[in-house]
Length: 108
Image (tube, rainbow, N blue to C red; front, side, top):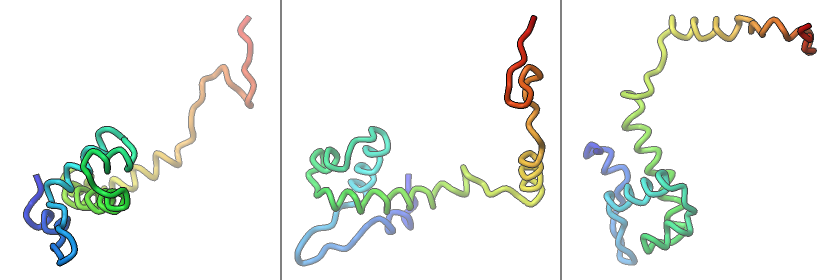
């Protein structure tokens, strides 16, 4: 799914004190959170990771996913499209004719 560049963004180096969580597992943790909405505590228990690790990992991976997919699925509107959007906001709402001045007129 990810290009190797994005994979490198969510991969950290091993140290003398700990092994880093592989990119695949980081992605799995993040996707589990996004799919289920479980608490960080539940997800941490499922993956045998610390709660603080999960709480820092998820925003990093979400940001990488966003950067990877934003251009394809969330294209930035062009100047003409922004004008159209602005014009839609400036157009007054046309409420149903039975509602006037905040009071509903009765039909008889």
